[in-house]
Length: 186
Ligand SMILES: CC(C)(COP(=O)(O)OP(=O)(O)OC[C@H]1O[C@@H](n2cnc3c(N)ncnc32)[C@H](O)[C@@H]1OP(=O)(O)O)[C@@H](O)C(=O)NCCC(=O)NCCS
Image (cartoon, rainbow, N blue to C red; front, side, top):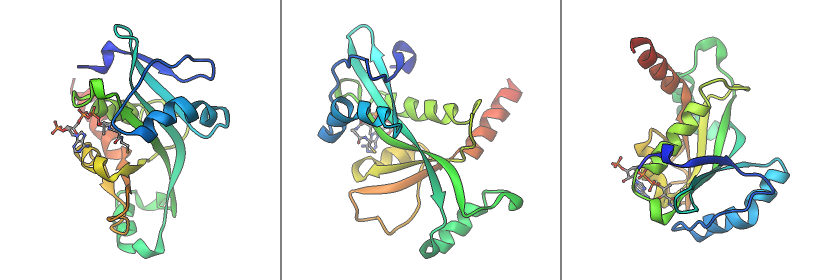
């Protein structure tokens, strides 16, 4: 199944939401109860994929600005992260975008949609950006960390190993370089 079969719709306050149900009740509630408030308060923007054939919401994700900041307790992690950045551009904070929520409907799960959505976000933030954005971050549910790892995300720290959610990141620069290389060889 491919995302291209579905309609991509940014949420508006007027939009009538089509049915959606994933495994996680909080994520179901967010879409119907909170997403429009976050939008109105300029706190997060939600995007939907709709199946015109079934009139269902296939998946949604919400995004907000973020930053990756130096943590003195994670000095060795920071050194590793900094090695990715060219010397003269090293900072104590790096611009990022956070995936606030991401959920795929139970009816469409385990068919590659989640992976395609992450790729969609990676492309969106490496092509024609209006602002600088080096990393994607996510507070991943413990049950979903393997999904993010399979998609190139890594952990920031071991400190949250036993928490319900773990902070993870994806570096967009190697992704962008790989895309540039692919398009130059086509
Ligand atoms: C997690 C979620 C977004 C994954 O979406 P999906 O469309 O089912 O995932 P995909 O089919 O694209 O899976 C891509 C790969 O990740 C793996 N994967 C997916 N969900 C996984 C999970 N929870 N744990 C481990 N691996 C997982 C798949 O097996 C697949 O692996 P493969 O490349 O070896 O085939 C979806 O299951 C979901 O909405 N879950 C409930 C809400 C949730 O946990 N959201 C994340 C909040 S941080």
